[in-house]
Every structure is written in C-alpha cells, then in structure tokens.
Length: 256
Image 1: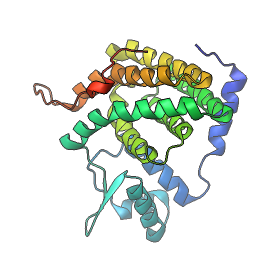
Image 2: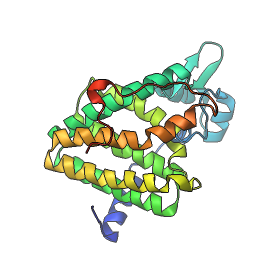
Image 3: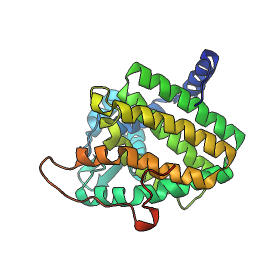
Image 4: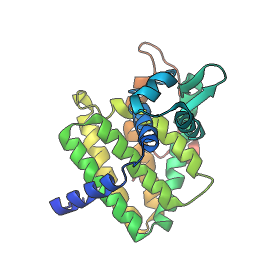
C-alpha cells in the first residue's frame, strides 16, 4: 500500500491544473470528452452544433474541427446531413468489449512493467493519490476520469503503437459503462471499489519492480473485479445475453 503526504497531493493537483486547456477550442474539446465519458452526453445522442457553439462561445468552423477530432478519437460518429452522434454502445460493440478487454489490459500491463520510466511511475503515483481523494470525496465522475487517466498512463508506459489505439477505444467505453461502479449511491459495490483502489497500488508496485508476469495477471484480476457488475448494468433485467468470456488462454480469474 502506498501513502503520500499532503504536499504530494498539492503538487499533483497543481500538475493537473497546468494541463488545463488554454483556448476556447481546447476547452470545448476537453469538456466534450469528459461529458461523453461521464455520460452527461449519453451514447447515441446527436449533438446540436448551434447549441454547442453557443455553450462554448466558439464559431462553427473551430467547433467542426473539434468534432472531427472527437470522431478520429472515436468519441463521436459523424453522419452526413445529420451531424455528430455520441458513439453508440450496441450489443455487438459491448460483446466485443467484454471479449477484448482482458486481452488488451493484460498485454498493455505486461509491457508497462517492462518499459516504464521513473517519471511515468511518478505520474502513476500522483494519479493514484488523486484517485484516493476522489473516493474519499464520493465524486463518481472524478473517480471514473482518474481511473481512465491511471490506465492511460499504463498504456503510455507500454509504448506500443499497435495496442495504443485499441486501449484508447476500450477506455472510452469502460469509463462510460463503469460510471455505475464508481457511484457512491450504490453501497453494494463499496467493497469492490476499495479493492479496486488497492489493486491500483499493487499495479504501481509491480510495474515499478518490473514484474511483468504478475502485473499481467493482476490486470485480469482487476478486470474480473468489476466485470460482473458492469455486465449486469449493460444487460436488461430479466434477460440473459452473453457478452463474451475471457478466452481460455487468459481464463485466470482471481489470479494475482
């Protein structure tokens, strides 16, 4: 378990503040990402360019550049004559998500333990500090966004141009459907949330020590911790629609 002082928390928050977008266009881009990730803009929603331009006080040309970038990052889908739509989550995409997640997370985390730099490990520790603070404050959206940041940093550590796009896409949907997991109004998941936070500390220790095999196994265990609850959230009550199992080669539920 890692414990950090208040000075570390302040330094971490200041680092995050320095990352804040400086222009209206950049703020619009970041805010739309966050609103999609936290389901303030729900999957399948069509975006009104006039409303967005008014909201973010930017003209239509830079707004369209923002929407084109979001489309490239797979936050939205652009439709001719209908505009931008928040990327929907169909049964097919969700099934593929459940099949791909353990494979991608395991491979990414293994490579992270092999390639991480001290500076990246420090970023991971700083993010974990803020993640713990969000848990104490009961902020579901902040928890989800910091969890995404945590796993994005692990992806940066992996430094693999083939896996990186898959991880980015995976984390978008994981963050969206994982909002229920981080909601403090769901006390039934309190134990799992605490265990997930503890596993973040374990990730840091294993990556810092370069233990690639154990880090990869922990990624599977970390996924399985939230998998059942996420699956129940996305499957309509009373219906049993299989969303995919961990492939046999990775079927190591509960390992660490």
